[in-house]
Length: 371
Image (cartoon, rainbow, N blue to C red; front, side, top):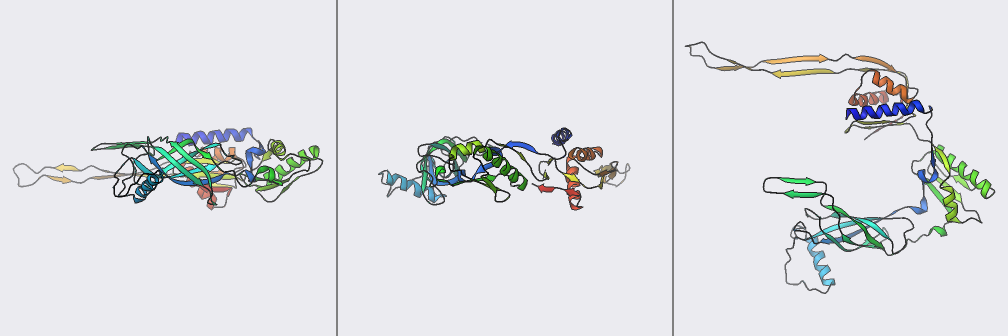
């Protein structure tokens, strides 16, 4: 892990040396913003998975599975009164899906299936026809098909092996869209573009790029900034909305982002943005290592005496302190910051502690994000 972090810091230092002090990346509008009218919609449904090899729900522990099985059989014209079902080949599941924007009836989409009861595996199962509803309670799709489960579980009398998650899977193209979304793209009067990373500078640059294009194509500006996330584009009278969106989304702009340092303490990953600055600060780095070892010795009594063999404890304590170094950091750019940290031989866990200390001292001119 330390080697990985060192490679990350080295690559960031190389990029900083080749880039200007102020980092600005050129990207297309379609890469940094999305259309408000073209957002996704979440769907959810409750269904049954059949065909499992004895790894389904135990109907006594999962009564809702038995109720669902009886209701399904009754809908198929099969009477289940007076009988007790002990099948282990069925499992109750929740089915979720994301309805893509502008989806039309008849098109397909993937669905995710997750177990609700005490089933041990969904491998080899088939999802029975399940209705998927939106937040408004309307049915927008119907899902059915065989599951693909990447995880597996195998057990014996003395041990058990599990890899991945065997109680969740997917049905590729398993849902057929039955109902179109209420809103249509052609009915929109304006286009609302939402930045994926809200920033006023990026929003203003996007507006300027759109207005420069519209002044040549339509004779006047058509875009305005609402806030750091939204840019509103008015439709010209003689413009086709779909063609206008296709022309706008390919316009290049210079994006900007605030300075951030992202630290993941669990994995030791550190990502430092190119715009990170550090005020002049002195940093000391050194560790104290204390080693305690027990070396008991056996003491024998004198010959022909009434003594007994005894164990005499012996403890050795060694304290070592590595060569501590003090460095003065003043990072005008990323290269200076990384070079300063490397000059005092800081390891990944030490870098995380130093960054937190610099932030507490008020010398880190960036947002510190801890994950």
